[in-house]
Length: 72
Image 1 (cartoon, rainbow, N blue to C red):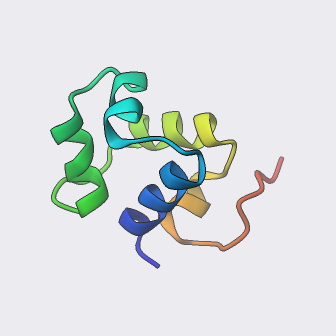
Image 2 (cartoon, rainbow, N blue to C red):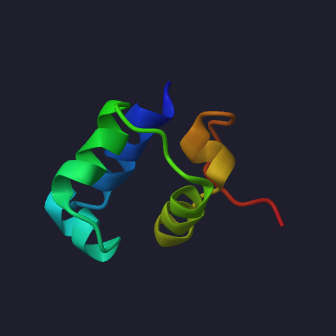
């Protein structure tokens, strides 16, 4: 599964619209939509911000693991 799909799935699992999440991330909805569609690469800063928000590992978002738990 690509991380673009995982971004969308996480957002939908948390019952958020793209606009709501974009507002939380302090960006415009079209900019966030480009991350979910794969038109724009996600920065490491945004990746960490999303992982912290959802309580999952960055590896989970990137599709490197199917285990969303953070290993500490």
